Structure formats: C-alpha cells, structure tokens
Length: 389
Image (tube, rainbow, N blue to C red; front, side, top):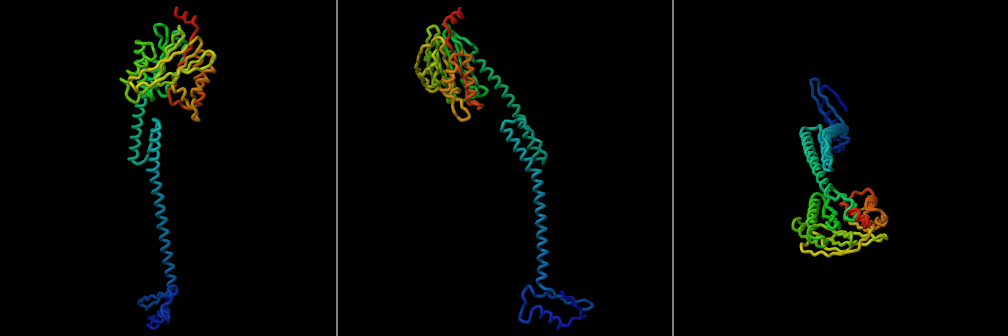
C-alpha cells in the first residue's frame, strides 16, 4: 500500500498511477492490478493504491471466518436442540414404549415415572391407570380360574378301587382348566365303566364341553352298559348341545370283573392299551367318528379277555403327543416302553412311572396339551369277594 500527500496532487501524478495500474498495453491481470483511491481533505489530496489480490485475499479470509463461525454456531445449536429433545422427548418416550411392551408381555406391576413435558407426564399417568385396571381384572380372572380348576378337579373320580379293579390316574391340564375328561363308574352289578375323553381346543370352552361329556355319559349309563350304545347316546346329545368346532373324542371300556371280559367302543380317541401278564401289549383298535360330527353314527363294539393281573391303560393324545425339545413325540412306543418297564408294578406305581417318563421326555419343555392317563389292574377274585362282602 502506498499513501502520498503532495499538498495537492497534480493530475499528471494521478494519471501516472492509473497508467501504472492499467499498464501501457491494456489492463493488467486481476492478481497484479492496483486499486487506487483518492481522498481530498483541507490539507490536500491523498492517493492510496493497493494490489487487488491482497484485497481479495483479505475479503476471502473474512468471509471464510464468518462461514466457519456460522457453522459452529449452527452445530452448537443443533447439539443443544438434540440434547433437549433427548432429555424432554426421546428418553421419556422410550421409557413409555418399554413400559407398554412390558405390559403386553403380562407384567402388570410396571410403573412409569416420567419427568418431562406435561403431555408426556399425562400420558405416563394414563398408562399407569390402565395398568392398574388391567391388574385388577387379571386378579379377578385368576380368582375365577382357580375356582374353575378346583371344580374341574373335583369332577375327577378319587377312588383307588372300583369293582375288582385297582385304579390310578394322572390328570394335568395344559392351562388352568382343560378339555380332557376321565371317569370311573362302578355299576350296580360290580362291573366298572372306564372313560377318557378329549375335547378339541383348550381353556374354558373346552372345559365346559368336557363337563357336558361327563353329564351325558352319566345319563347314558342309566340306560345301557354297552359301550357302543353309550357312545351313540352321548354323541346325539353332544351334537344337540355343543356348538360347531368343538368336536370330542371318547373311549369307553366296560369291564366285567367276574366274567373277566371287557367290551369297548371308541369315538376317534387313542386306542386303549391292554397289557398281558407276560408283558406283551395289545391295542383295542375298534373305532369310529368323533363326537359332534354326525348325529346318526352307529358305533362298533369290540371285546377281549381281561384276566387277573392284566393292565388296562387309557390315555389322551397329550401323552402320546408329548414333545421333547427336539420335536420328538413320546408316541405309542413310549407308552409301550413304559408299560413294559412297569410290568410288575401296581396301578399307582405304574402311573408314577408314566409321569416320570413323560416329564423326562419333555426335558423341561412346557406341555401344550392336556395330559390324562387311567390305569386299571384286575385284582384276584379272592380280593374282590372280600371287598364285596
């Protein structure tokens, strides 16, 4: 930069400076051209000159600083806004979402302590109020289901002997109440009727249908002791009273302990097992349609010898279809294997063997179906006569 004071600059001097800026042969390049300024004061004139490149460099540097300052300010503002949003909105919302997910998974003890804006705090309070109401409803439901379970268990026969049979059973609903049903009815002639039924589905509807099966069977026994006739009457009443979609299977076995014969009929249920005294196992394989499909079904009836010491086993599909963690079924082979293992055991110990075998097969896996099993062992005639006297 050059500054000169000559009292009053002559036009020739100014022209010379302009000529130096522009060059003799035309304008100089932008980087090397001069800027010339003229200032007039009371003491004279001042001419100022500077290279254009220096001016542009200073301008660029100033502009760059301003841009950087704006970017830094914007970044700081963004970080501040993000922090405030996370603190006021994001984290409280995440806690509310986690709380709702926990409630959806059945945890009704969840409590929200959201300290945020009034809107989110109000939402948290409403979620807590909803959870409290759901917890109250769940406690009421559990109370009623415990009552229903107690009623269903009370419907199961408790006797360990009937007629000339030693009886033991296993009944484990998959839910609070189940669709399985079994019965042991001692008739007036000291013969015994055994029954196992399984209603499709689970829970309260299946349990109600199973209770109807018991009522229908109890009434049918008053008219006949023949399993085929009993199943026909039960099926007709089942079709009349039970809604579509809740079919049922049922196996009925009548044991004449004095004649040492049994007769049986089956409405789509698992075939009963008959274990001989030598350990061999026979299936009672007569069967027809399930209950609730065709009101006019006529059921076929089979018969077999049943001598002292032999075992009769009726199971639901919750036994044969018990799964282990690798999706392997317990199956009929598991039933036969357990029977052979417990060949010389009484009815009670045979049921204990089955319970251990099934639980061992599941290996911690939860049962997905009701588990029902009834074992009857024919006692010697002398023991029967002693009890009848």
